[in-house]
Length: 199
Image (cartoon, rainbow, N blue to C red; front, side, top):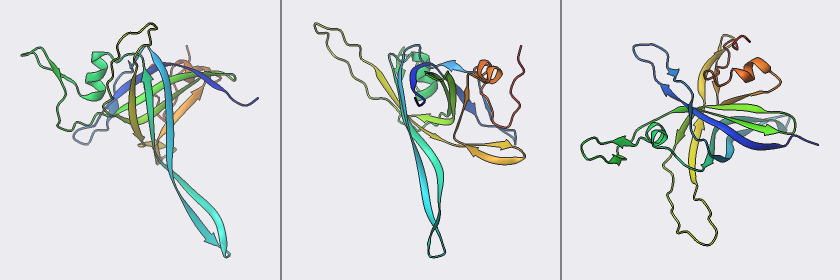
C-alpha cells in the first residue's frame, strides 16, 4: 500500500515582517488560522525546458516556480481577517472595513496531516491570501453549514543553506524525526538552521 494522507489540523500562520536599515526580515509567532479546518488543496506550477544534445532531448530541466492553493475552513475569525486580508477597525463608526488600496501581507502557512505511514507537518514560506467569496444560505430541513474558502499563492523565500542562497517554496518534517516534529510550531522552522534540541 502506498502513502495515504487524511486528516487536516493545526493550520497556523506567522506574519513576515521585512527588515529595515539592512536588517534581515523575520517571522512572528505562529497564530491559529482556524479551529475548523476542512480541507487544503495545492497545485505546484513549474516551468520545464527541453535540453537538446546528440540530436535528441538529452534532459528535461524543470524549475518549480510557485504554488496556488486553497484552504476551506468552517469559520474565519475577525482577528484572522485583519491579519491575512487587511480588514481594519474604525473606532469612530464601529465598523470594520476593507480598503481598495493594495496591501501586501505575507505569511508562513503551517499545517499538520495524518496518514497511514505517520503524521507530517508542513510549511509554505511566502504565502499571500486573496479575499474569499462570501455566501449565506437560508436554513432548510437539513442544516448544512456554510464554509469559507481562502485562496492563496505561495512563492519562494531565500534562505542560506550550506553557505549558499536557496529559494525555498515549502518544507515538511515527518513524525519520525521526533525533535523537529515536536518543536515545529515553537517557531517557523528555517531551512539551513539547526533544529531545536530535544527536552
